[in-house]
Length: 417
Image (cartoon, rainbow, N blue to C red; front, side, top):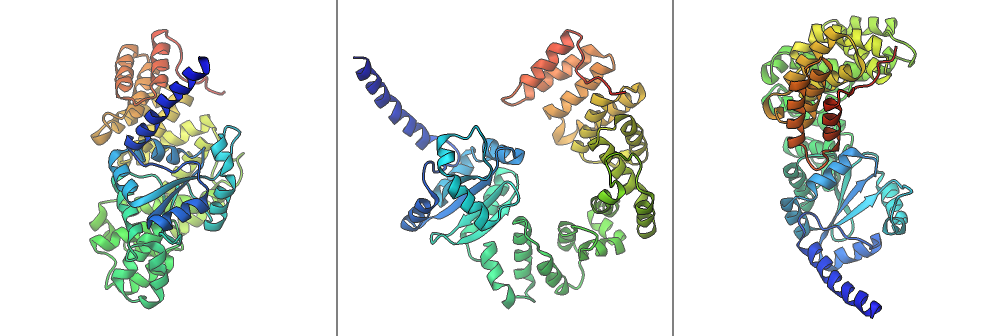
């Protein structure tokens, strides 16, 4: 009787599981099928294929899987238009039997299509030909919008690429190609340079967007145009925007030379002098920002405290990124014990709680913790409880912080002396 009961139970469970999969929201990914089988199915059904290339350690990949792929509108579009397949590019000891069975397929996809950024999305036509690619974490609407480009030869990246030699002076075509290349994380310099030659000026509202998009390093044509036309750029993008972009590029370009060894605490003088000679307007700010980032990454907290104080005194007022303000405030909260600096960090944190981020639980948590460390337990608990109510499924960290506050326990690390 025991075996019969189990069999009956399985009969009840299996249809329910299938029904749940069929009616569930989000993208219905194919499971347990090899790549060749999916290619064959796509050809038979005349459907495109979508492949999500991810790794288990990739935060943006997890965000897409948890918050974007599961949305009903995303599922409605993808389930109608594509056969969908997930390719795990790394391997772990926790991989289940299905993942292990497909290791060879994942390796083939990785090696054939040279996946280097995660997540990467590949799109194949019904004949199994790669026609489109783009990368990164994004909103559901942007994900659907970019995925629609995979369905037409007029917007598919690889289809446009094949036509490039016949359209080297067609600005409309070049615009589509360089955007598609950028979204695919491919080098778009050639197409951008060709597009520039078709334009009487790059300082229009649309073209300045492309300048920003393709300012990748100091050697890029877009960067040089912005450096030489900062006032024109600011007229279209806003006061100080050219300076901010130039500073960002300088930091990215000179960072390794400014701090060649982890042991150093001051920027390399010869490199700093070189930046000063070439970019006197932005040099001080770029070096100061690079110093903050280096000392933070190497956890030299006593030096970081001095660097972040000086940087924020000089340049903090113009920071618009709430994430950046929160990041600096949290670093000070966790690792610095200077009361004056903690009070300054509280102000940065308060600034991050504005506009669309007024109810961001992570930013509220930072503000609450700073209040608590500064001795304002009552108000800190009010803010931390607000963060808890706004948090998503994982509320454990907020609950733990509230518990520590109620017990008068430290919520920060011991500062290294």
